[in-house]
Image (cartoon, rainbow, N blue to C red):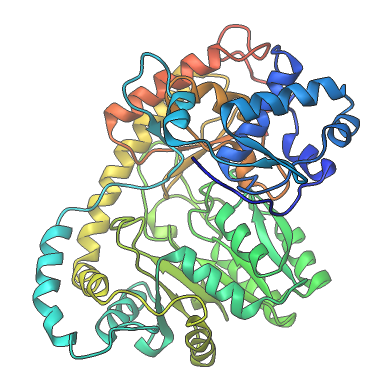
Length: 493
Protein backbone atom coordinates (compact mmCIF):
# COMPACT_ATOMS: atom_id res chain seq x y z
CA UNK A 1 0.00 0.00 0.00
CA UNK A 2 1.26 3.49 -0.90
CA UNK A 3 1.68 5.83 2.05
CA UNK A 4 1.92 9.50 1.07
CA UNK A 5 2.19 12.79 2.82
CA UNK A 6 0.59 15.98 1.65
CA UNK A 7 2.58 17.65 -1.11
CA UNK A 8 1.85 20.51 -3.51
CA UNK A 9 -1.73 21.52 -4.15
CA UNK A 10 -3.44 21.74 -7.53
CA UNK A 11 -5.91 24.60 -7.89
CA UNK A 12 -9.43 24.17 -9.19
CA UNK A 13 -8.49 26.19 -12.27
CA UNK A 14 -5.38 24.09 -13.04
CA UNK A 15 -7.25 20.84 -12.48
CA UNK A 16 -10.08 22.08 -14.69
CA UNK A 17 -7.58 22.60 -17.54
CA UNK A 18 -6.29 19.05 -17.13
CA UNK A 19 -9.80 17.62 -16.97
CA UNK A 20 -10.73 19.32 -20.27
CA UNK A 21 -13.60 17.40 -21.93
CA UNK A 22 -14.42 15.13 -18.99
CA UNK A 23 -18.17 15.48 -19.57
CA UNK A 24 -17.96 13.70 -22.97
CA UNK A 25 -19.62 10.58 -21.61
CA UNK A 26 -23.09 9.29 -20.86
CA UNK A 27 -21.86 7.95 -17.51
CA UNK A 28 -23.12 9.65 -14.37
CA UNK A 29 -21.29 12.91 -13.77
CA UNK A 30 -19.49 11.73 -10.65
CA UNK A 31 -18.25 8.58 -12.43
CA UNK A 32 -16.98 10.53 -15.48
CA UNK A 33 -15.19 13.00 -13.18
CA UNK A 34 -13.64 10.22 -11.10
CA UNK A 35 -12.51 8.35 -14.23
CA UNK A 36 -10.78 11.43 -15.65
CA UNK A 37 -8.97 12.25 -12.38
CA UNK A 38 -7.90 8.61 -12.12
CA UNK A 39 -6.40 8.77 -15.61
CA UNK A 40 -4.48 11.91 -14.66
CA UNK A 41 -3.01 9.98 -11.74
CA UNK A 42 -2.19 6.89 -13.82
CA UNK A 43 -0.56 9.01 -16.54
CA UNK A 44 1.51 10.90 -13.98
CA UNK A 45 -0.08 14.24 -14.83
CA UNK A 46 -1.16 14.45 -11.19
CA UNK A 47 1.79 13.35 -9.08
CA UNK A 48 1.55 11.27 -5.93
CA UNK A 49 1.10 13.51 -2.90
CA UNK A 50 -0.73 16.29 -4.77
CA UNK A 51 -3.56 17.82 -2.75
CA UNK A 52 -6.79 18.08 -4.73
CA UNK A 53 -9.05 21.14 -4.50
CA UNK A 54 -11.78 21.15 -1.91
CA UNK A 55 -15.10 19.71 -2.99
CA UNK A 56 -16.73 23.14 -2.81
CA UNK A 57 -14.03 24.92 -4.87
CA UNK A 58 -13.91 22.29 -7.61
CA UNK A 59 -17.70 22.12 -7.82
CA UNK A 60 -17.90 25.90 -8.23
CA UNK A 61 -15.20 25.96 -10.91
CA UNK A 62 -16.71 23.08 -12.90
CA UNK A 63 -20.26 24.31 -12.53
CA UNK A 64 -21.55 21.11 -10.92
CA UNK A 65 -23.06 20.27 -7.56
CA UNK A 66 -20.86 19.64 -4.56
CA UNK A 67 -22.57 16.24 -4.30
CA UNK A 68 -21.11 15.28 -7.71
CA UNK A 69 -17.56 16.14 -6.65
CA UNK A 70 -18.00 14.45 -3.25
CA UNK A 71 -19.18 11.25 -4.97
CA UNK A 72 -16.24 11.40 -7.41
CA UNK A 73 -13.75 11.77 -4.56
CA UNK A 74 -15.42 8.90 -2.72
CA UNK A 75 -15.10 6.67 -5.80
CA UNK A 76 -11.42 7.59 -6.07
CA UNK A 77 -10.89 6.73 -2.41
CA UNK A 78 -12.58 3.37 -2.92
CA UNK A 79 -10.30 2.65 -5.92
CA UNK A 80 -7.21 3.63 -3.93
CA UNK A 81 -6.24 6.69 -6.01
CA UNK A 82 -7.05 9.26 -3.32
CA UNK A 83 -6.67 9.24 0.43
CA UNK A 84 -8.02 11.69 2.98
CA UNK A 85 -5.60 13.09 5.54
CA UNK A 86 -6.71 15.09 8.54
CA UNK A 87 -6.02 18.75 7.83
CA UNK A 88 -4.86 18.07 4.27
CA UNK A 89 -8.04 17.22 2.37
CA UNK A 90 -7.95 14.72 -0.49
CA UNK A 91 -4.45 13.68 -1.58
CA UNK A 92 -3.41 11.73 -4.69
CA UNK A 93 -1.90 8.32 -4.09
CA UNK A 94 -1.34 5.06 -5.95
CA UNK A 95 -3.31 1.94 -5.06
CA UNK A 96 -1.58 -1.23 -3.96
CA UNK A 97 -0.41 -3.46 -6.80
CA UNK A 98 -3.15 -6.06 -6.44
CA UNK A 99 -5.88 -3.43 -6.60
CA UNK A 100 -4.18 -1.65 -9.53
CA UNK A 101 -4.07 -4.91 -11.45
CA UNK A 102 -7.77 -5.48 -10.87
CA UNK A 103 -8.59 -1.96 -12.10
CA UNK A 104 -6.44 -2.20 -15.24
CA UNK A 105 -7.23 -5.77 -16.22
CA UNK A 106 -10.37 -7.07 -17.87
CA UNK A 107 -11.92 -10.22 -16.52
CA UNK A 108 -11.10 -12.30 -19.60
CA UNK A 109 -7.55 -11.00 -20.15
CA UNK A 110 -4.61 -12.99 -18.81
CA UNK A 111 -2.04 -10.25 -19.32
CA UNK A 112 -2.11 -6.47 -19.53
CA UNK A 113 -0.47 -5.01 -22.65
CA UNK A 114 1.56 -1.91 -21.78
CA UNK A 115 1.73 0.32 -24.88
CA UNK A 116 2.62 3.42 -22.88
CA UNK A 117 6.30 2.84 -23.64
CA UNK A 118 7.79 3.50 -27.06
CA UNK A 119 10.59 0.95 -26.82
CA UNK A 120 11.91 -2.30 -28.25
CA UNK A 121 13.26 -5.54 -26.79
CA UNK A 122 17.01 -5.90 -26.45
CA UNK A 123 19.01 -6.18 -29.65
CA UNK A 124 20.70 -9.51 -30.34
CA UNK A 125 24.21 -9.83 -28.94
CA UNK A 126 23.88 -7.92 -25.66
CA UNK A 127 24.54 -11.00 -23.51
CA UNK A 128 27.69 -11.78 -25.50
CA UNK A 129 28.84 -8.15 -25.30
CA UNK A 130 28.30 -8.26 -21.54
CA UNK A 131 30.52 -11.32 -21.27
CA UNK A 132 33.27 -9.64 -23.28
CA UNK A 133 32.94 -6.47 -21.19
CA UNK A 134 33.14 -8.46 -17.95
CA UNK A 135 36.40 -9.93 -19.19
CA UNK A 136 37.81 -6.41 -19.59
CA UNK A 137 36.50 -5.13 -16.28
CA UNK A 138 39.59 -6.25 -14.38
CA UNK A 139 41.61 -3.43 -15.91
CA UNK A 140 39.39 -0.90 -14.10
CA UNK A 141 39.08 -2.48 -10.67
CA UNK A 142 42.08 -0.66 -9.20
CA UNK A 143 40.24 2.66 -9.76
CA UNK A 144 37.58 4.08 -7.39
CA UNK A 145 34.84 3.52 -10.00
CA UNK A 146 32.97 6.81 -9.52
CA UNK A 147 32.91 8.03 -13.10
CA UNK A 148 31.18 11.40 -13.60
CA UNK A 149 32.43 12.05 -17.13
CA UNK A 150 32.60 8.63 -18.82
CA UNK A 151 35.20 6.01 -19.72
CA UNK A 152 37.53 7.21 -22.50
CA UNK A 153 36.78 4.11 -24.60
CA UNK A 154 33.06 4.91 -24.62
CA UNK A 155 33.47 8.65 -25.10
CA UNK A 156 35.64 7.97 -28.14
CA UNK A 157 33.13 5.44 -29.51
CA UNK A 158 30.33 8.01 -29.17
CA UNK A 159 32.47 10.71 -30.79
CA UNK A 160 33.26 8.33 -33.65
CA UNK A 161 29.54 7.78 -34.14
CA UNK A 162 28.98 11.53 -34.50
CA UNK A 163 31.84 11.72 -37.01
CA UNK A 164 30.28 8.88 -39.00
CA UNK A 165 27.06 10.93 -39.12
CA UNK A 166 28.92 13.95 -40.50
CA UNK A 167 29.67 16.00 -37.36
CA UNK A 168 33.30 16.40 -36.32
CA UNK A 169 33.47 15.50 -32.62
CA UNK A 170 36.22 14.72 -30.11
CA UNK A 171 35.95 12.53 -27.02
CA UNK A 172 36.39 15.48 -24.68
CA UNK A 173 33.11 16.94 -25.97
CA UNK A 174 31.18 13.99 -24.53
CA UNK A 175 29.72 13.48 -21.04
CA UNK A 176 28.30 9.99 -20.44
CA UNK A 177 25.06 9.99 -18.45
CA UNK A 178 22.52 7.59 -16.95
CA UNK A 179 20.32 7.70 -20.03
CA UNK A 180 18.76 10.58 -21.95
CA UNK A 181 16.39 11.62 -19.16
CA UNK A 182 19.34 12.09 -16.81
CA UNK A 183 21.03 14.17 -19.50
CA UNK A 184 17.97 16.44 -19.85
CA UNK A 185 17.70 16.88 -16.08
CA UNK A 186 21.43 17.64 -15.70
CA UNK A 187 21.36 20.24 -18.47
CA UNK A 188 18.23 21.82 -16.99
CA UNK A 189 19.84 22.03 -13.56
CA UNK A 190 22.96 23.70 -14.96
CA UNK A 191 21.40 26.03 -17.55
CA UNK A 192 18.02 27.04 -16.11
CA UNK A 193 17.32 29.35 -13.19
CA UNK A 194 14.08 29.56 -11.26
CA UNK A 195 11.56 31.59 -13.22
CA UNK A 196 13.47 31.35 -16.52
CA UNK A 197 11.59 30.62 -19.71
CA UNK A 198 12.29 27.39 -21.59
CA UNK A 199 11.01 26.87 -25.13
CA UNK A 200 9.48 23.41 -25.66
CA UNK A 201 7.53 21.70 -28.41
CA UNK A 202 3.88 20.87 -28.04
CA UNK A 203 3.00 18.09 -28.30
CA UNK A 204 6.31 17.02 -26.85
CA UNK A 205 8.17 14.70 -24.53
CA UNK A 206 6.44 14.88 -21.12
CA UNK A 207 9.48 13.86 -19.07
CA UNK A 208 11.44 16.76 -20.55
CA UNK A 209 8.66 19.07 -19.36
CA UNK A 210 9.02 17.56 -15.89
CA UNK A 211 12.80 18.02 -15.81
CA UNK A 212 12.61 21.64 -16.93
CA UNK A 213 9.85 22.45 -14.46
CA UNK A 214 11.81 20.79 -11.66
CA UNK A 215 14.68 23.18 -12.45
CA UNK A 216 12.26 26.09 -12.05
CA UNK A 217 11.54 26.84 -15.72
CA UNK A 218 8.33 28.33 -17.06
CA UNK A 219 7.52 26.53 -20.29
CA UNK A 220 6.95 28.44 -23.53
CA UNK A 221 5.30 25.97 -25.94
CA UNK A 222 5.62 26.04 -29.74
CA UNK A 223 3.44 23.88 -32.00
CA UNK A 224 4.62 20.85 -34.03
CA UNK A 225 2.27 18.98 -36.35
CA UNK A 226 2.49 15.84 -38.45
CA UNK A 227 1.67 17.73 -41.64
CA UNK A 228 3.73 20.91 -41.29
CA UNK A 229 6.37 20.20 -38.67
CA UNK A 230 7.45 23.16 -36.55
CA UNK A 231 5.54 26.45 -36.52
CA UNK A 232 8.68 28.37 -37.45
CA UNK A 233 7.22 31.87 -37.17
CA UNK A 234 5.94 31.12 -33.66
CA UNK A 235 9.24 29.50 -32.67
CA UNK A 236 11.35 32.43 -33.86
CA UNK A 237 8.95 34.94 -32.33
CA UNK A 238 9.03 33.12 -28.99
CA UNK A 239 12.83 33.11 -29.00
CA UNK A 240 12.98 36.84 -29.74
CA UNK A 241 10.22 37.81 -27.33
CA UNK A 242 11.40 35.82 -24.29
CA UNK A 243 15.19 35.35 -24.86
CA UNK A 244 15.05 32.05 -22.97
CA UNK A 245 18.28 30.44 -21.71
CA UNK A 246 17.31 27.10 -23.30
CA UNK A 247 15.11 25.68 -26.03
CA UNK A 248 14.48 21.93 -25.89
CA UNK A 249 13.78 20.44 -29.34
CA UNK A 250 13.58 16.95 -30.82
CA UNK A 251 14.44 17.69 -34.48
CA UNK A 252 14.66 14.07 -35.70
CA UNK A 253 11.55 11.86 -35.70
CA UNK A 254 9.95 14.08 -33.13
CA UNK A 255 8.13 12.34 -30.29
CA UNK A 256 5.16 11.98 -30.77
CA UNK A 257 4.46 13.44 -34.25
CA UNK A 258 7.35 11.79 -36.14
CA UNK A 259 8.27 15.08 -37.88
CA UNK A 260 11.87 15.86 -38.88
CA UNK A 261 13.11 19.44 -39.09
CA UNK A 262 14.46 20.39 -42.55
CA UNK A 263 18.06 21.52 -42.87
CA UNK A 264 17.32 25.12 -43.83
CA UNK A 265 14.97 25.47 -40.89
CA UNK A 266 17.64 24.14 -38.53
CA UNK A 267 19.98 26.90 -39.68
CA UNK A 268 17.38 29.63 -39.15
CA UNK A 269 16.37 28.36 -35.72
CA UNK A 270 19.96 28.09 -34.52
CA UNK A 271 20.81 31.56 -35.83
CA UNK A 272 17.81 33.07 -34.04
CA UNK A 273 18.69 31.22 -30.83
CA UNK A 274 22.30 32.42 -30.98
CA UNK A 275 21.12 36.01 -31.42
CA UNK A 276 19.17 35.72 -28.15
CA UNK A 277 21.84 33.82 -26.22
CA UNK A 278 19.61 30.72 -26.14
CA UNK A 279 21.21 27.29 -25.92
CA UNK A 280 19.36 24.80 -28.12
CA UNK A 281 19.19 21.34 -26.54
CA UNK A 282 18.59 18.88 -29.40
CA UNK A 283 17.31 15.53 -28.21
CA UNK A 284 18.51 13.03 -30.83
CA UNK A 285 17.46 9.81 -29.12
CA UNK A 286 15.32 8.92 -32.16
CA UNK A 287 17.67 10.30 -34.80
CA UNK A 288 19.06 7.02 -36.13
CA UNK A 289 15.81 5.04 -36.02
CA UNK A 290 15.12 5.44 -39.74
CA UNK A 291 12.18 3.36 -40.94
CA UNK A 292 11.69 4.57 -44.52
CA UNK A 293 9.65 2.24 -46.70
CA UNK A 294 7.10 2.58 -49.47
CA UNK A 295 3.93 3.41 -47.53
CA UNK A 296 3.84 7.16 -48.06
CA UNK A 297 6.29 7.93 -45.28
CA UNK A 298 8.32 11.12 -45.54
CA UNK A 299 10.16 13.66 -43.43
CA UNK A 300 7.98 16.70 -42.78
CA UNK A 301 9.14 19.41 -45.15
CA UNK A 302 12.28 17.53 -46.12
CA UNK A 303 11.27 15.26 -49.00
CA UNK A 304 11.01 11.47 -48.90
CA UNK A 305 13.53 8.76 -48.21
CA UNK A 306 16.85 8.35 -46.47
CA UNK A 307 18.61 10.67 -48.93
CA UNK A 308 16.86 13.63 -47.27
CA UNK A 309 18.21 12.81 -43.79
CA UNK A 310 19.72 15.90 -42.14
CA UNK A 311 23.02 15.91 -40.26
CA UNK A 312 23.04 16.15 -36.46
CA UNK A 313 21.65 19.50 -35.25
CA UNK A 314 25.03 20.80 -34.10
CA UNK A 315 26.33 20.57 -37.68
CA UNK A 316 24.18 23.61 -38.57
CA UNK A 317 25.12 25.91 -35.69
CA UNK A 318 25.69 26.04 -31.92
CA UNK A 319 23.66 23.31 -30.25
CA UNK A 320 23.99 20.86 -27.38
CA UNK A 321 22.91 17.35 -28.33
CA UNK A 322 21.57 14.46 -26.28
CA UNK A 323 21.69 10.80 -27.27
CA UNK A 324 21.21 7.39 -25.71
CA UNK A 325 21.10 3.68 -26.52
CA UNK A 326 17.79 3.13 -24.74
CA UNK A 327 15.80 3.11 -28.01
CA UNK A 328 18.38 1.53 -30.32
CA UNK A 329 20.02 -1.14 -28.14
CA UNK A 330 17.92 -1.68 -25.01
CA UNK A 331 16.24 0.37 -22.33
CA UNK A 332 17.91 -1.79 -19.69
CA UNK A 333 21.28 -0.27 -20.62
CA UNK A 334 21.05 3.04 -18.79
CA UNK A 335 23.60 4.84 -20.94
CA UNK A 336 23.11 8.24 -22.54
CA UNK A 337 25.31 11.21 -23.31
CA UNK A 338 25.61 14.93 -23.87
CA UNK A 339 27.68 16.43 -26.67
CA UNK A 340 28.72 20.00 -25.89
CA UNK A 341 31.64 22.38 -26.13
CA UNK A 342 34.35 21.92 -23.51
CA UNK A 343 33.42 24.82 -21.16
CA UNK A 344 29.89 23.44 -20.76
CA UNK A 345 31.23 19.90 -20.38
CA UNK A 346 33.32 21.12 -17.43
CA UNK A 347 30.29 22.82 -15.84
CA UNK A 348 28.20 19.67 -16.22
CA UNK A 349 30.85 17.45 -14.65
CA UNK A 350 31.26 19.85 -11.69
CA UNK A 351 27.50 20.00 -11.11
CA UNK A 352 26.81 16.31 -11.53
CA UNK A 353 27.92 15.08 -8.10
CA UNK A 354 24.96 16.86 -6.48
CA UNK A 355 22.64 14.37 -8.16
CA UNK A 356 24.69 11.20 -8.75
CA UNK A 357 28.26 9.94 -8.57
CA UNK A 358 28.69 8.59 -12.06
CA UNK A 359 27.74 6.00 -14.67
CA UNK A 360 28.40 2.26 -14.03
CA UNK A 361 31.66 1.17 -15.64
CA UNK A 362 30.47 -2.27 -16.76
CA UNK A 363 27.50 -0.88 -18.68
CA UNK A 364 29.79 1.63 -20.38
CA UNK A 365 32.07 -1.18 -21.53
CA UNK A 366 29.09 -3.14 -22.88
CA UNK A 367 27.87 -0.15 -24.89
CA UNK A 368 31.37 0.65 -26.19
CA UNK A 369 31.54 -2.92 -27.50
CA UNK A 370 28.12 -2.73 -29.19
CA UNK A 371 28.75 0.66 -30.82
CA UNK A 372 31.43 -1.01 -32.92
CA UNK A 373 28.69 -2.62 -35.05
CA UNK A 374 26.07 0.13 -34.80
CA UNK A 375 25.41 0.20 -38.55
CA UNK A 376 24.42 -3.47 -38.46
CA UNK A 377 22.27 -2.92 -35.37
CA UNK A 378 20.44 0.00 -36.98
CA UNK A 379 19.85 -1.91 -40.22
CA UNK A 380 18.20 -4.74 -38.25
CA UNK A 381 16.17 -2.26 -36.19
CA UNK A 382 15.01 -0.53 -39.36
CA UNK A 383 13.65 -3.80 -40.75
CA UNK A 384 11.87 -4.55 -37.48
CA UNK A 385 10.34 -1.10 -37.25
CA UNK A 386 9.28 -0.97 -40.90
CA UNK A 387 7.43 -4.25 -40.48
CA UNK A 388 5.85 -3.10 -37.21
CA UNK A 389 4.85 0.28 -38.61
CA UNK A 390 3.28 -1.16 -41.74
CA UNK A 391 1.33 -3.75 -39.74
CA UNK A 392 0.05 -1.23 -37.20
CA UNK A 393 -0.78 1.51 -39.71
CA UNK A 394 -2.61 -0.92 -41.99
CA UNK A 395 -4.51 -2.35 -39.04
CA UNK A 396 -5.54 1.06 -37.70
CA UNK A 397 -6.58 2.37 -41.12
CA UNK A 398 -8.63 -0.74 -41.81
CA UNK A 399 -10.28 -0.91 -38.40
CA UNK A 400 -10.83 2.83 -37.97
CA UNK A 401 -11.24 4.41 -41.43
CA UNK A 402 -12.37 7.68 -39.85
CA UNK A 403 -9.08 8.14 -38.00
CA UNK A 404 -6.08 9.98 -39.45
CA UNK A 405 -3.18 7.52 -39.18
CA UNK A 406 0.24 8.82 -40.35
CA UNK A 407 2.96 6.46 -41.57
CA UNK A 408 6.10 8.07 -40.14
CA UNK A 409 9.52 7.73 -41.76
CA UNK A 410 11.24 7.00 -38.46
CA UNK A 411 10.97 6.78 -34.72
CA UNK A 412 8.77 4.38 -32.82
CA UNK A 413 5.21 5.77 -32.83
CA UNK A 414 2.39 7.19 -34.91
CA UNK A 415 0.40 10.22 -33.74
CA UNK A 416 -3.17 9.28 -34.57
CA UNK A 417 -5.94 11.83 -35.12
CA UNK A 418 -9.16 10.47 -33.59
CA UNK A 419 -11.54 13.01 -35.10
CA UNK A 420 -13.14 13.85 -31.74
CA UNK A 421 -11.85 14.98 -28.30
CA UNK A 422 -12.07 11.51 -26.75
CA UNK A 423 -8.47 10.42 -26.19
CA UNK A 424 -8.75 10.17 -22.40
CA UNK A 425 -12.10 8.39 -22.70
CA UNK A 426 -10.62 5.91 -25.15
CA UNK A 427 -7.57 5.25 -22.98
CA UNK A 428 -9.77 4.57 -19.96
CA UNK A 429 -11.95 2.22 -22.00
CA UNK A 430 -8.86 0.45 -23.37
CA UNK A 431 -7.62 -0.19 -19.83
CA UNK A 432 -10.79 -2.17 -19.18
CA UNK A 433 -9.82 -4.37 -22.14
CA UNK A 434 -6.28 -4.95 -20.88
CA UNK A 435 -4.47 -2.30 -22.98
CA UNK A 436 -2.51 0.56 -21.45
CA UNK A 437 -1.92 3.63 -23.65
CA UNK A 438 -0.77 7.20 -23.09
CA UNK A 439 -3.57 9.67 -23.78
CA UNK A 440 -2.87 12.60 -26.11
CA UNK A 441 -3.02 15.26 -23.36
CA UNK A 442 -0.02 13.65 -21.67
CA UNK A 443 2.10 15.18 -24.45
CA UNK A 444 0.73 18.70 -24.03
CA UNK A 445 1.82 21.42 -21.63
CA UNK A 446 -1.70 22.26 -20.42
CA UNK A 447 -3.86 19.25 -21.17
CA UNK A 448 -4.47 19.77 -24.90
CA UNK A 449 -4.52 17.05 -27.61
CA UNK A 450 -7.69 15.19 -26.62
CA UNK A 451 -8.14 14.52 -30.35
CA UNK A 452 -4.89 12.54 -30.58
CA UNK A 453 -3.48 9.23 -29.43
CA UNK A 454 0.14 8.05 -29.53
CA UNK A 455 0.45 4.41 -30.58
CA UNK A 456 3.85 2.65 -30.74
CA UNK A 457 4.69 0.25 -33.57
CA UNK A 458 7.70 -1.31 -31.85
CA UNK A 459 5.92 -4.36 -30.42
CA UNK A 460 5.75 -7.97 -31.72
CA UNK A 461 3.01 -8.92 -34.19
CA UNK A 462 0.89 -10.83 -31.69
CA UNK A 463 0.89 -7.93 -29.22
CA UNK A 464 0.11 -5.42 -31.98
CA UNK A 465 -2.85 -7.55 -33.08
CA UNK A 466 -4.11 -7.84 -29.49
CA UNK A 467 -3.77 -4.09 -29.08
CA UNK A 468 -5.81 -3.46 -32.24
CA UNK A 469 -8.54 -5.78 -30.97
CA UNK A 470 -8.58 -4.07 -27.57
CA UNK A 471 -8.76 -0.65 -29.21
CA UNK A 472 -11.68 -1.76 -31.39
CA UNK A 473 -13.57 -3.03 -28.36
CA UNK A 474 -12.78 0.14 -26.42
CA UNK A 475 -13.86 2.41 -29.30
CA UNK A 476 -17.16 0.57 -29.63
CA UNK A 477 -17.75 1.18 -25.93
CA UNK A 478 -17.32 4.97 -26.01
CA UNK A 479 -20.61 6.76 -25.50
CA UNK A 480 -22.06 9.05 -28.12
CA UNK A 481 -18.96 9.37 -30.27
CA UNK A 482 -19.43 7.27 -33.37
CA UNK A 483 -22.26 5.90 -35.45
CA UNK A 484 -20.85 2.82 -37.09
CA UNK A 485 -17.16 2.55 -36.24
CA UNK A 486 -14.95 4.81 -38.34
CA UNK A 487 -17.63 7.28 -39.42
CA UNK A 488 -15.79 10.22 -37.84
CA UNK A 489 -14.39 12.19 -40.74
CA UNK A 490 -14.90 15.75 -39.52
CA UNK A 491 -12.61 17.93 -37.43
CA UNK A 492 -9.41 15.91 -37.77
CA UNK A 493 -6.60 18.29 -36.78
